[in-house]
Image 1 (cartoon, rainbow, N blue to C red):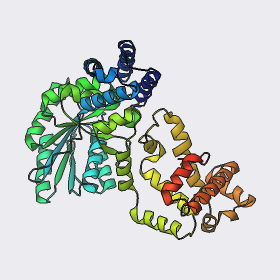
Image 2 (cartoon, rainbow, N blue to C red):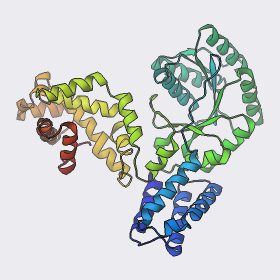
Image 3 (tube, rainbow, N blue to C red):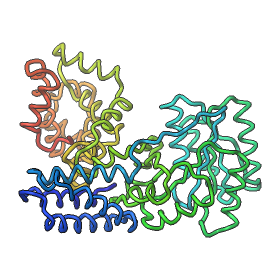
Image 4 (cartoon, rainbow, N blue to C red):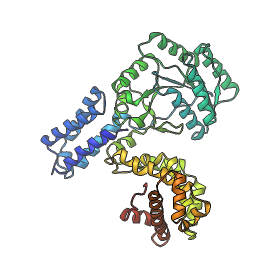
Length: 453
């Protein structure tokens, strides 16, 4: 998400770095480029106009025109304005009510409501330690009822049974009563997808809202819809007391115009981003962090949170203790580290949150990172336990067997062993070179060729 916008804005800033000062002339050229970047990202025209005018007014001050670093000055202004139009700060779910707190999911057909409902349930269960009940009121698509039941079993959350012949209001009412008797903290109601021009369906969801009186009414929007998403959000907001927005399928959209437009157009905060197909791929929306990522500054806080959430602390401590005692680094350790990275979304997801990485093509990141990492894991899985502990045992005949078992070539096995040898040497230097900090400095000076990170 935001890939194309990030690359375009970074080119604009690079052009300014060659200028001695910001002047009226180069500011006009810069604003024209920023305007085109936003329009190409499918940002709503009224939002683009307001955004450009705010930048123009702020850049007109003596402080900016007199600066000796015009690129940095513009970055600061654009970052502040991006943060402002996206909502300033994170807006968390407000579940402060007598349990169960009801969360109603609304949106168009195919926007990803059912999957998003399951993602939200998993997050509330694992991150907030809430007892959650899911229910589907989509009586027009029986597959949606079954889909939610399957997702509920996958994430370990109870799903209240419903059937296509029932009324949505009856389903929701019965689910609410069941949630009360089972002492559930949260009830998430998945609704049928509907077109905003369908008056009958919009009336149905209004009746459903009145029946359960939700504390949160979340509009789920497909990020790839572009301008239509903004118009739809406006229509739903007029029909229902929407409290927040979840932008789904952001991993499939390089533009990001919906996230930049919807908050400004309907005045309701974006609460979460759907960043992948898996049930754990739901991130809270922080406008300041997203603005920094758009401008190539990374999201270090988000990266730290990903590490804390995904990394097994006991295994990490065990690994560190092993290195400290000089017990060596073997292929089992390498495999474990790659598994930890995949839990955090893979190399592409991690690199996207590192400063200065916006100009790296996404396809290149995936090819040199996640794809390579899967291949390396398959090779290690094809080895015997003894070969993983003592890679020096892997000679010609064993390499042929391992390549055949992993579906790779002998050259791939040789490449893995060379890369592992380089990593092993660096690990041995950790104690002498200042631990992990020293290792990172060494890797920055002499990165192992072809490594997935």
